[in-house]
Image (cartoon, rainbow, N blue to C red; front, side):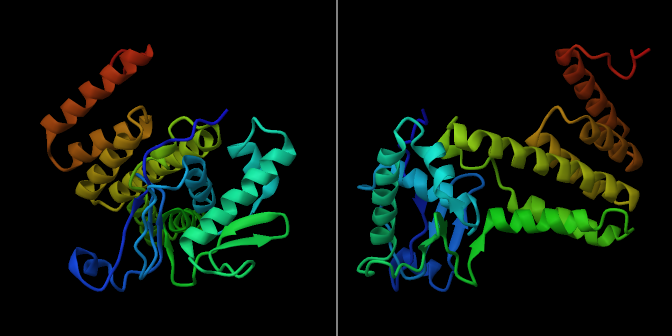
Length: 268
């Protein structure tokens, strides 16, 4: 059974005066990396009285970046313990609650944000909306298109963009909920791979300082990533910082020891 998290959703509010004025003009924004944030221009949202499962429903739709999600997938994720009919009823109530909250006064069937498409539902993002998950996915797609083309500049730009979007684990508010764990791990792996690949490309382009930054970012995401450790050590070596390279090799060797793997100096 999914354990719905009771932490409030972090909401960026906007208004004409006071501290909220800083957000005036900010586009519709959805962030899922590093903590959920929702900003709707001209709205001030207070989720205090919204039930945790309804908040989870919004986060579930948001993480799909505006793509439709079939009803059965939603039920399996958020109401796996209920019979189908009861789950559908809860889903309908949750959708109605979200619509009324996000678009007060909207008439039935006229919601622009939480929409139904056949037996699927989606958080419909306006054309100018920003969604970090969607932007990350687009950057990864752009990087993969460069594979085998020799377009290293385009690859570097795409990887830098992907890392700019990835600001932390996916929806940490959901904790170990079954529906998010696999996706969270997938995005973490993608981000770590992006950082390690970027570090290698920066090193190939004789930019050791940039390679160090990218490799360190990769190790912050996944401290057991072999390629990031190796590039980090080599980047320090090429930049002439022999002491830093030695420290990296020592730290990497310690990581290998914890895994029971022979270090480079002891390998047969």
